[in-house]
Length: 200
Image (cartoon, rainbow, N blue to C red; front, side, top):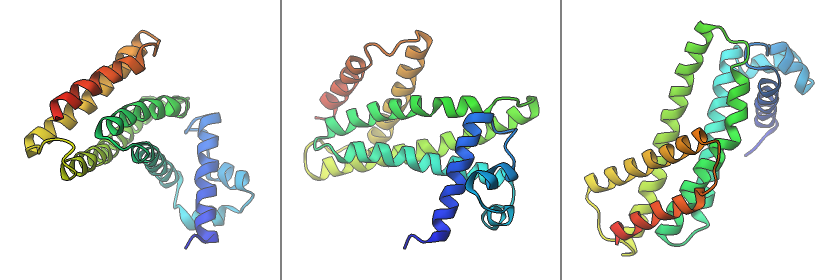
């Protein structure tokens, strides 16, 4: 059951996120966070030992939020084609929505701090990739059970998921280089149509 302690922990993470966005990671202290939520430092330290723990928890919450958003978009669809399209669209949209947060975090970091931050981001990326693989795998297995698509071998499934995740990252990267997401819907539609034809 959701209780006051859970609520306070959420408030700490929300306050920290807002402060990171405004001032960057380096400048935000435990004092700043406690003042932002109107509590004592002791209350914040009850949940988190230090700034690093707060930051790790913020990243963890962010991953869960992104995963939930993608899953919700997929669950709203019936066919595997629509689920994959929802996955692609939502993945790119959430990635772009979170970009200002990650850009703000780096403000004022020195080389050593940036290296540490890059390592943390690599871990976040792995968490997201793992969750995304699971979502796509579940959708494919449900579709196979319903005989909507043919039965895939383990290798075929792994390859397809790899191609989808790599393809989406590539599409996003190229559109960022052009500084334009014009044509995104048509591009994703083509990718999904090709996948759907292969699955059938």
